[in-house]
Image 1 (cartoon, rainbow, N blue to C red):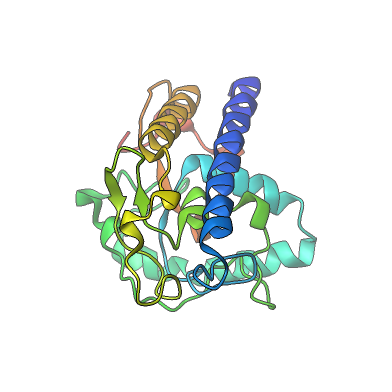
Image 2: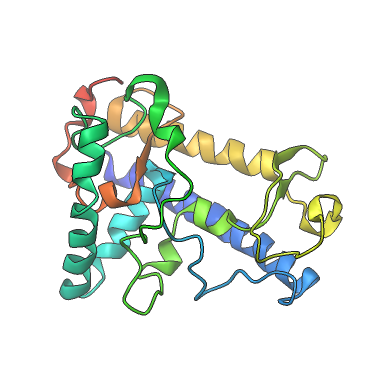
Amino acid sequence: MDRGGLRRILEDYRRLLREVDSWFAGCIASAGTERIACGRGCSECCRGLFDITLLDAFLIQEAIADLPQAAREEARQRAVSRLPELKRLWPDLSPPYLLNGLPGEEWMEMPEDDPTPCPLLGENRLCLIYEARPMTCRLQGLPHVDRSGEVFLESWCSHNFRGEKPLDDPALRWTFREAFAREAALIGKLAEILTRFPHREMDTFIPLVLLTDYDAVDWRNLPGF
């Protein structure tokens, strides 16, 4: 594996994540905390299974390595408890637990009402790796409307903008099309380093990240890729 190339890709991704955070902070500054409840310490959406990219997975593994051993093991045990359910759904699911090789992309239809907390929530309901949380966690809660007017996500958290329809608020708009294109390009670069092919989709679930040793994966011979 090209470790130097991997570091550069992850640093570029961290830069993109910082831009996402800056946009979100700007939205809160514009709308006010009485209209946007999202922020550090809120865990209303930290539950269930949702797909994250392999870029996020690598950052999560780096952050987990810096946690105290007890916290790492507790998080891993919470992740282990989810594996039997996933193996029942997909018997062939195996490390590195990438979802894109599953038949019919059935993983995209996971139930939204799953109350199971994210394994990376500590006992105090705070994220153990907040600074390394995935992009989808950073984007959660607000609609995604590009500055051009194109709508990428028209929903928002029910705790935000109560009784309002914020889709037309220009203060919430951002360069979503450009940001998502940059993310896809970085995924392609990461995939090329790992597998020799520039796949634009390499997704997994957070619990599965905690159960995988990416250094031990034979990336050049992944089934389904």
